[in-house]
Image (cartoon, rainbow, N blue to C red):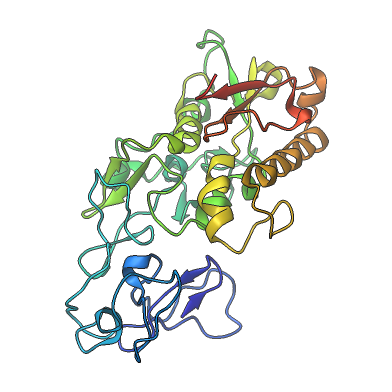
Amino acid sequence: ICDPEVSGCWCDGPQGRIPAPKGSPPGTPPLKRGRPMNTPQCRPKEGADGTKYNAVGSRSWADIYGPGGWCVAEQPVATCPCTADPEALLPAVIDGLAGRTCEDMVEMFCINQCSGHGECNLGFCKCDPGWYGHDCSRKVAGQALEPSRIPQRRWLQGVAVEPPAALEPPPAATRKRPLIFVYDLEPLFSSKLLQYRIASSWCVHRRYHQGNVSLDIPNWGYSVDTMLHESLLQSQHRTFDPEEADFFYVPQYSTCFIYPIKNWADFPWFGPPNTANRVGHAALMLVEVHRYLSTQFPYWNQRQGRDHIFLFTHDEGACWAPRVLTNATWLTHWG
């Protein structure tokens, strides 16, 4: 069964997924979640007649669809990696599931876990009414500030915080400098990309495990996009007032787009879908980011982007940065 919203595969058969009724609003949960088949460890390498599949899976047909198979048996003989080793780079099959047969639901990863003012869906925060922003930390002017749910949800404590910039009364003028304004960009450049990742550890610096325990993902340098973004959102250097900002941070997850999104998902594309040049797509994505910044906000044009910070963490460093970002401040692993 294909989940077209995230390009994910799920079992059919006795342990299969039953989608929401046709015509249901976007985001409607399935009638039955079923078991995921999103990685090669969860898919057959051959058909029932022994015909070999090309680059589909690594399991025998019996492991998946036999009497004791993953998609058939209550207690299957062969299982998929629903709960990953915290030290492993190979992840659980999809965010939000744990247990031997993916039967347990755990918190999904979102930036600052939506500040306790929203619900997380595969990396995207659906904010409570009146709240907005990537981390749901901002409230519509003139509306009362409801308390965060962080104190009531123990699994958020120690991971999520109410950003100092969001507290009342407003921070004093003697705050730590530099003051950094973090843009709330079109989510397609960041949090929506997280929704298209198939494996829970890709693109992120931490994830929830069995028992709703949040653990860091070690030895994975490609996760700095979310780590720095979250750190700045929680930082005392953050300001909600762009007029007083010393710098502007642009949270774009081009590293996540380079891998795995371009390789695995059917959307989005920022260039011809059939091109093999991954940084070409990423460069076009940042051209779109620049267009968004320079047309929707006045701050890029005030200093031609010199106070705007962009992060480049993939293997090519910033060598592929588009010319429109020449004046910006670049952060990169590779100098």
